[in-house]
Image (tube, rainbow, N blue to C red):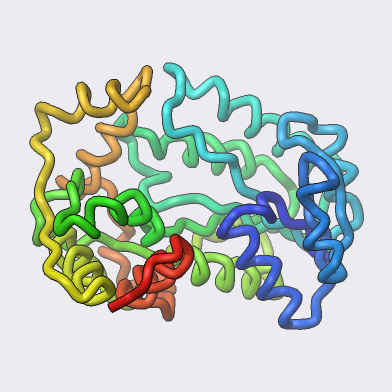
Length: 291
């Protein structure tokens, strides 16, 4: 039995579907039973647990062949990441108690960066789970292609506003389906100790290339426009963020290159989904016709 956290999200869904396709038993972990109904209909066992409740979480992990573990995203954290630290401590305690045979933990490119930024929280998670006595893989995924969902509305009007810049800079990206498939494959592997697996798409994607993908999907011109760095904070605060600094630092890391895979991804696993396919899927999910 493979226990899956985040099964109602894009990555968790892809992990569960990949395991089910391989005829592997799945236990979906949800906060309330209603959210697990569709997974129960597919033959999954359902466990009820909140990620901040280590006892319930340990019970959900009990007897698992493997656990797929991920943190809920906190895009606007308070200083010092107190919200995520609660989840990390609970996850570490639950895994230490349940002792599944293996753990695949979703991490990120930049989890090992020493500079302050939003992705430091994944470094904190990795440090906590390194104390476990069970085999652990840290799956460091690239920038999600599905982040482009924020650009759909503006793309239909002919432009996307890019915080990734310069506009021709190639960024390691990955589709969430590829993340899920890779995590499912790792759960079915055997290893000892701790491993880091990097994951990105077969080709890196620039903001200009992202705009071109939208243009092909919409059958109309779309261009990327760089948002000036000195406007970021006011824009993010106007959007409701209280502490935009970690997000801005993360963007700086991608833009200047200190958020990067070792050897520029030479040893990273490569996904199968390209940016055109990912953008077309986003358009379908938003009920917009592709060109």
